[in-house]
Amino acid sequence: MAKILIVDDSDKIVNDLDHFFREQGFEILTAGDGEQGLDIVRNNPDIDLVITDMAMPKMDGLTMSEKIRNELQNSKVRILALTTTSDRHVKERRHAAGITVWGVKPFHGESAIDVIHHLLKMPEHSASRKTKSVTPPKQG
Figure: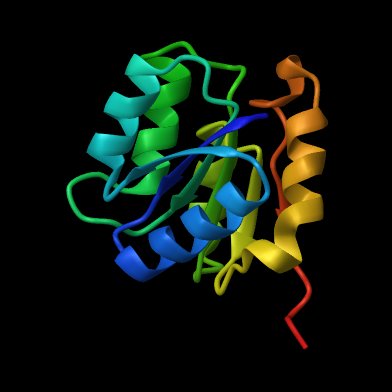
């Protein structure tokens, strides 16, 4: 099964997503900020998907994504960025950073599992070239 890295400074979000995705059979790694996340990607080049918060201490999700693509030259990993902002400059920077898909918080594993499976089936060359928005349906 695929290996997913969850990067968020909220312990609750990390724990909730970790628990949900492990139950689905995914191998999960976690980090509390972008610096830790970048180190984990550097040491685990077989990670298939990074789910990252945008606003974190030490290093934000955008900077981490840019470094994954540029410093580590990793174009295969898919990056799902979670945000609460719709700022135009952030949208432009997300595309330049090679973020595959971005979603709006709150993000629930249950409502996003189809998106995750779709991302994992994308050809490697598409992982860093397409940026699109996904809004998982609200739980009801």
